[in-house]
Length: 228
Image (tube, rainbow, N blue to C red; front, top):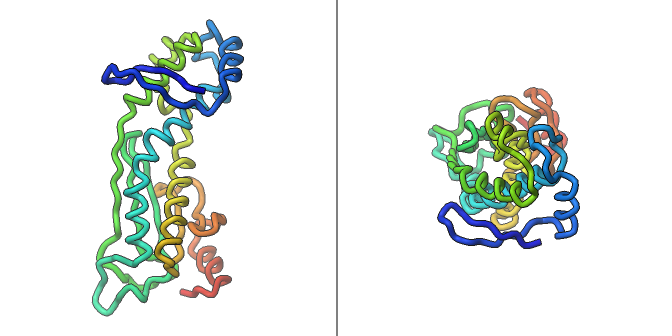
């Protein structure tokens, strides 16, 4: 359905909601007059919040991430002496979200498979964002649903509360990696993980879960005829 709202510049806008008007009105009849702080996290507003975070914020980084992936797949590193692009077989990409306003992404040759340092420094990407516009929209959605969010807003951040940002970021990184792989026809393969150790290391090309130890990574790629 189409939803009319006013942005931070006080301009009238229309945005598509990934639900029907019937579903929206059904939700409204159920939650009207309720306090947001007393609700569970499995109803419409949180699904819409995640959808808009993905579309309004993460999608804005798609071009930068595509360019970043292309650099990696073309092995565009600053190499150590006696090393070059032909030496890079597997890369490790990792990311970290800083206090809901920045996503940091880095990449370097996979340490488990490249025993010697091949590059002088890793490739890095800093993606900064603001949540004001998203929260402004969400509050208008809650007003349309006639939900009382005053107490919730004092204690929680509507734009990020219970937001599974790691999953959203990983989905985008994998999507961009595969898209640029089709363009570059690169033979380089990659791993992906959250930099602080949350979750497990996964294969960028197949989405398979590898595990976290060096032994598991070596064994995983050995089966694909890539050896340390």
